Image (cartoon, one colour):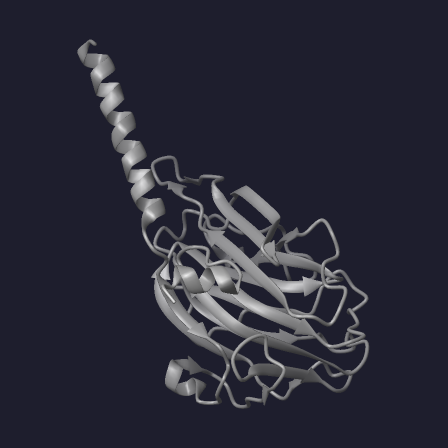
Length: 282
């Protein structure tokens, strides 16, 4: 074997060893919440004013309940709330979601909003609707939707990356092919987002960001060529989770509720509960 072939072989072995080592690393759970008691402030949740715990949980003794009672779209029972975590360029979330019997949709191609990730490019109090990047995990018209918007970038050097403004909003939508939310049972919702890399020498983003979604353990959304940020934000990382259920004014079809339980945010996929417990060494 000549020197060139030996160097190539060593490079391949080092690359494979590094990849296997990364795969073997355990997931870092950035935070988890079972909603079994109301003391969430002691577990670093913030920006909340109301909390309603309910029975009938997926696991443990309780879950969080959100309720809509009138056409204003304002949620009752529990309020929006946030949780910071260690900044990372790749994030996974797992939680269980149950919609009340006879759940109705907005009648539009959007809403309700539900859960979000935000980044280090905005403050811990910044609203989700007009940021440098907000990610969405929500049910829309029976489908699982993952989405992204970056309205605040309209005046940035490289402008918007999540599509043009349309009536004051923009966004990329990544929906499951099938309607999945068709009953009032608990379902496991999972999502993965990975920021695209940047070619700073050429001043352009690489189309290698990742968006994936799972429903009850089945992969239902997968895109591996996504641009989530421009070169304006080379230090951007995910660092904030925001749970903010919301129907726009006049979009609520009737009074209804939803429940969320057994949430975990991590640096690797945890999977549905039995697998998650093994991953966490439980």
